[in-house]
Image (cartoon, rainbow, N blue to C red):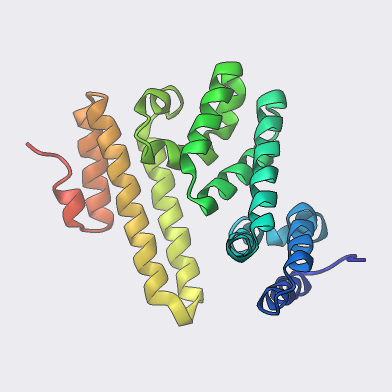
Length: 230
């Protein structure tokens, strides 16, 4: 039925699905939502970001008025989690599970899943680090982080690159440019603070100070200034 849809047509598909929800056609909207999650990337790879952000947010909203939709979402999450534990082969599956957990406010489940992979196959867990690290930092699971982080300064350089990318993207979004730039700066500061705290807990005050000073040179923020007590 849906063949060779481009990004614009896929976006219309999502908009039409939202319209079904407003009309109360919940089951039809759910089936369309599941189809999008399972087929969007095969039809249009450019929908990768939308699939794991806006589309999941819409799914959660549908679940709030139509419980079977929430059950379908958690069932898919649990099925993919089991696949990861049993096979441990797909970074894409882990990214899906992590995004669903974030959408549902169940970030700790990502940490638990990552722990399971670490226990079963530490080598495979390395390929999931990129997707799990934010949740691990938020949970302050330094015992796990220290096994995978490597050089904190390299992680800091990633934050600098992400900040620049997000600021460049914000400049293209004139309508919400100020809000998006503020979000990018705050994200940079918060993640820099996580690295500083990790370095301090690891008794590496030298690296903590290096990250603090480097971050302050990028953006002055009192949280960074006061991050290390002399």
